Amino acid sequence: MSAPDHTRRWATFAMFFNVVAWGMSWVNVRAVLPEVGSGQLGAMRYLIASSVMLPIWLYRGRPLPARSDWPTVAALGLFGFCLYNLGINYGERTVNAGTGSMLISCIPVLVILLGVLTGREKVGLLAWLGIGLSMGGVVLTAAGSATGLTFNLGSLLILGAALCAAIQTLISKSLTQRYAAVDVTTWAVWLGTLGLLPFSHDLVGTAGRLSAIGWVHLVFLGMVPAALCYTIWSWVLVKLPITTVMSAVYAIPVFSVFFGWLILGEQPSVMTLLGGAVTLAGVAWVQTLTRRQKA
Image (cartoon, rainbow, N blue to C red; front, top):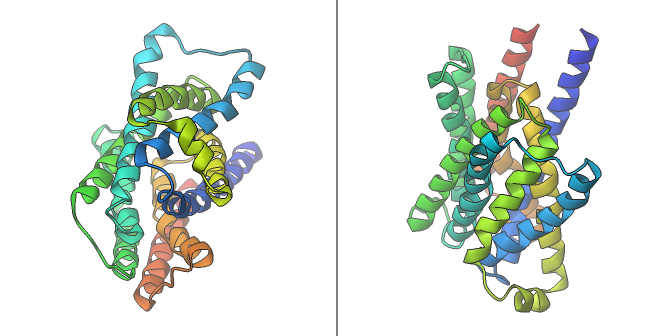
């Protein structure tokens, strides 16, 4: 009994580490986009992630999926790393961070709905209320941003990215039932990077023109939110219920606002702070309910 509890605690810690890192990544993307194109950012970020995963793959003995699983792995790379990143990078050029984080917060609802519809997950009324509370907090956070809510083509691209991420989550959970999380992430990152390359150009010239601080943001994006966090996330999805994991995703905009203020000097409004508090209350509600159900 102690071993599963111990593992659950580590998985919970890893889950919130990812939430903080992904909140930071929205700031990194905004900081580096003025220096690189949207397609270039995706390709360069995941070329770094692919390079990080290569020695790990070699050390683990060059594992590959069964031939019958290659289409599923390819779909994971396409939706989770290629289309998702193109939607985010192109969308963030015309959508402010508050709106973007609100739209991408549709991911938990999409994942949980798909889980309920397929009979894989059961969500009680109180948990739905907590999820709704978190979503309301995200809306307040976005509405309180300096430019308010903006809806345009970029908004549609980010909504499409949210759908891709929901599909990626379900595919990843399926594959990590049979393969190690690090291997699944490695294969998907490599295939996703191949899909991003046609949308980039002059990568060598862009790399040479990138400022030192731009490289700091880019390397962080490739090593932490991409390579490390997606590997951790694949493992967390196996160890914790989807309701628990997806409710935590709502806290990402809170950390995005915090790091935006800390690094980019973006001053949060009173409404943004109120939205952050409501979001965290909803997340805490769902986490508490899940622990009680486990007990």
